Image (cartoon, rainbow, N blue to C red):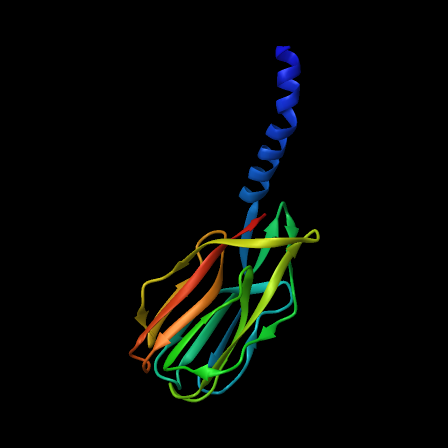
Amino acid sequence: MAAALSLALLPNLAATEASAAQAADVVIIDGYTQTVKESAGVPVTCPQHQVLLGRAHDGDENGNTTYYCGLIFISGELVDVGAPNWSGTQGESNSFFAAPPDQALVGRQHSGDENGPTRYATASLTWQGQDVNLTSYRWTPGQRESNSYSKASDGEVMVGRQHSGDENGPTSYQYAKATLG
């Protein structure tokens, strides 16, 4: 009877261990980096298979913004990043953007000063035909935009950003962990 009970528990234990192994086996590595003049209106989009991991900005609207992209691997296999879907525009000086659930940021575009338009590109993530879930969402504390740098922690991707005021105003970023359901 004890042997039968142990055999009955084996499938549940194996499924739990497999799920835990998959969740722990997400690796995100640095990829493409691009620096642009913030006010120039240049749309920055991560290359195929990459998502935004971070952003830095120096100075006012004529300063440079650097975007950091990265690749996601699960169990050693590259995660597929869907086609970019661009948002509508909003004024930069009072902007808030959060990607739809389980979508990562893959691009951004801004033109002009703090009164100019900003828009974002998002994409869905899949691995072996399964949706990649994003969990443990968190916002960073605000930092002065004119001297800002923010990058995802291990296993995280960028999913949102908010900014108030001009280059001296605060910018915060939202990150989330990539996992399998």
